[in-house]
Image (tube, rainbow, N blue to C red; front, side, top):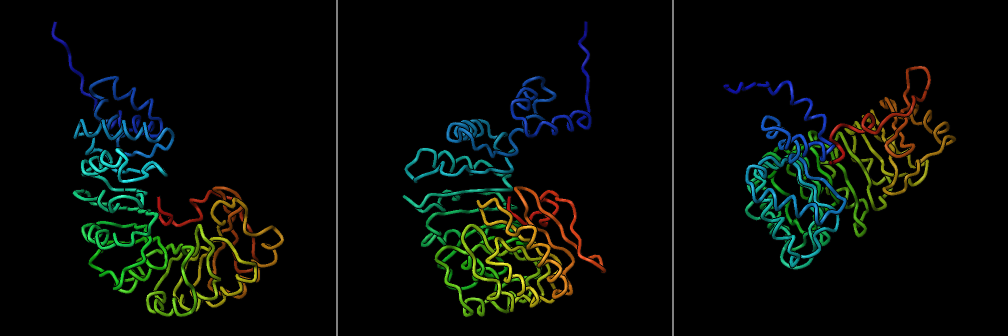
Length: 354
């Protein structure tokens, strides 16, 4: 008796497999269940690697597997290296990751934390042919003598849309021909001075995260004044404490969306009156503080005042607890608050890297 063969169109089983994208054990079972589902299951299973638990063993197994089967390496679109998994150039995992990155020819998003010991850490990108959409590069030594090699790598990334990096030794601004499609820049003062002067700033969303040793006075901002006047989207602050808003606001005449990470005090908000184009204010917590920057009494007292002195302000988003913000709006007659909502509704899509 002849065996009948059945054709199942991908439109029927693809949504089922996609539904399991966060359930790796189930995806693995699907991949092994039939020849029809194998390719689709592997496509979803290997698309993203962001496992952080039992990191060394798990990532070693993942990289070893894709290197033994080149087709699987070509499926990887996002790779997120766990914190502290790569401690030195002498670590055997270094060579494994280097070869793995070379094999990930279709990689789109890379989150990499490289060590400051041994050979230049930028070397781990040598020979990679992928074209990234997003790169988060953290190096404990702030790149230093490695910056020329890193900038050479960036020059090859013609499709890069989002970049997070710290820079110190860039003596001249980076030309706009480097990362010509850049839309989102996260970095310290060095990154801002390197990238801003030579490109169209109105199309960039900036996350300026000061480092511990960054000097801040009017001179630092004056050198970026022309570029800052074009900025429309800015997140100001990060893991380290930031300077007061008054040092910066005089240069932000076209700013429409501002995220303040932490508050020095409530009176700092009064400087917002110097931002004539501000439409959205986002007040977020200092990293790892987990507390709202403003209590209920402060909100009731200062938010009506802010709407009265900031004529273009349309809404305020305030962090109240992890992953949750509260919105305040001015409806033309009074200031009122809305029910708390998820952070994704408060922050612009894609602004916060990752």
